[in-house]
Image 1: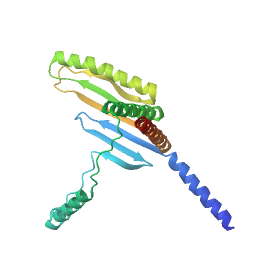
Image 2: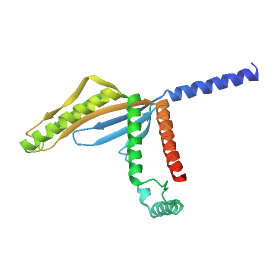
Image 3: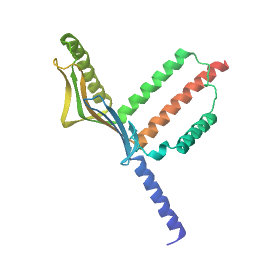
Length: 218
């Protein structure tokens, strides 16, 4: 086997690995139980890269020794001293224009993310309660159409999948004094989709700055 053949095989393997990485799924799981404990978890290639709340670290007595506390304080002070103190960038655009652009950018990113995402609903139930019958009925009248609108939006702008045995809906419990939710959603994108969204956002930001610079130059 010649060196060129080896080089070609190595390049082919690297290209194949790049394709596999770009096609790798990225999932974000959103869960909430009856105790209103929100949990978020991001995974890529089966590995967790984001978790909320963070996993609690094991408490060790050595972490609270005088030496360990002093070391953490020195590290914190060094980080604060090395932190840049640059003034916020000012492109000369008025605040209303900046807010309008930020809203437009966020809307575009969300719309593109949903259009590429596969959303799976496993549980999405809300049981409304407040301790007062009139308030419970009022809350039910607000939450029920809001949930219907959410599902309609996901169905319209994303690839929505509702599990066969999924529990979805809103109910009123006039005997309960609190509102409970049981939610489990999973959003799935691919790495290539995230790159496309990031590039589109960067192009939009660059175009905005270019327009502002041209206006200032006049």
